Amino acid sequence: MAQITEERHLQDLDMLRGYRNEVCFTVINRGKLWYDTLTEEQVEELRLWYNEWLDVTNTKVIPTKPKWLY
Image 1 (cartoon, helix red, strand yellow):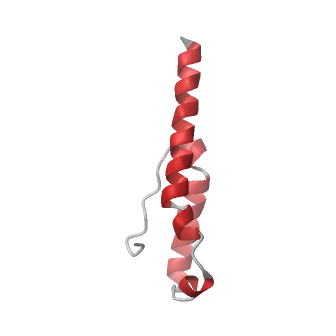
Image 2: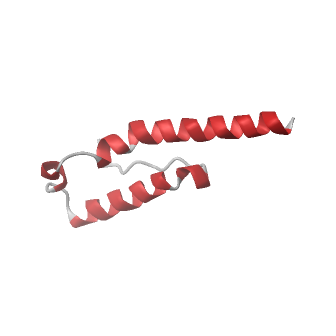
């Protein structure tokens, strides 16, 4: 039974990593021209959101996307 739980845990982590790659990294890896259009407040909000995504495999909490981010 413990093996099934561990397998499920690893599957959940893989799912979170995939979702992070799809949702977060596509934004974070935008170019300098896009970043240059952001306000200081937006940059800080983006930084916090990114750090929450980096920690998602520890927290298991999917971060809320900033409202201005599309």
